[in-house]
View 1 (cartoon, rainbow, N blue to C red):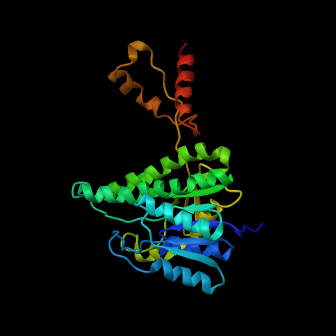
View 2 (spheres, rainbow, N blue to C red):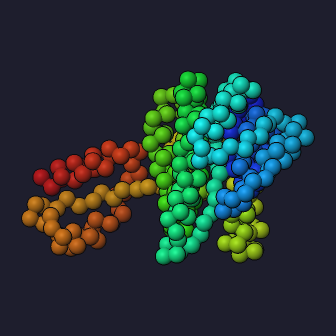
View 3 (cartoon, rainbow, N blue to C red):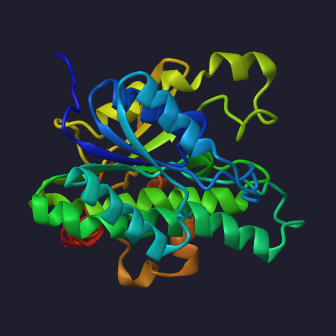
Length: 300
C-alpha cells in the first residue's frame, strides 16, 4: 500500500522549520501542493524571518509544488486570505495541519497573564482560526482532513507549562466536537501529540534524547492522520519511532441513594467512583448523561 497525495492541496502552519517543515517536505514528495505558512518568529513568537520561502525553495528544487505564506495564525483575516490564495492557485484545500506554536515557559507563580494569553492565542485560537478559514471549503467539496497538534503537556501535565498545557488540551477538545460536525461532509479530524527534537524542545530534552527524537519519525503518524483513509477523533502520540494512542475515558461511576448524596457520601464512595473496571471511551458528550441514566436505573 502506498499513500499518495497527488492532486491534494495541503496547508501546514508553522512549516518554516522543525516538524512543520518535515510535514511539508513529505507531503510535497508524495504529490501534494503545499502552502508553507510561517510567521518566521523566534520560539517565543517575536521577530520574523524568510523561513517559509526557504522551505518552498527546497520543495520546488526537488520538483514539488508549493507557495509561501507569512500570515499569523492569530489573525483570522490573514488566514482567510491564505486559503483564498491557495484556492486561486490550486482550486481546493484538502488538508490542514495545525502546527504553529510558541513557548513562554515559566512556573504559574511567575507567569504573567500576557504570557498565558499569547500562548493560548497562538496554539488554540490560532488552530481555530485556520480551521474556520478552511471549514466551509471542505464542507462544500465534501472532503477534508484536519490535524490538531496537542502535547503530552496538555494530556498529562508538565511543570512550568500551564499556558501551553491549557492550549494543547484545548486543541484536543476542539477535535472532539469538529469530528462530529464534519462527519457528514467527509471531514475527518484528529489530534497528534508529538515528541520531537526541535527548537521548541532543544533546552527541554536531554542532548541524547534530543538526537533520538528526530522530527522525521513523527511524520508517518501525521501524514497517515490526514490521508484518504485516515481515522477520525483519534489522539495519537509519536516520537522516536514509537506510536501510541491516548483516550479520554469514563468510569461506570456510582449511583448514590438520595440519603448518601452528601460530601461524606462521595468521600466514602470515592474508591468505587474512580475504579476503572468497565470504563468506556465516549464518542460524544451525551454519553456521560447516558451513563448516568444507566447507573440510576441500576439503583432501582
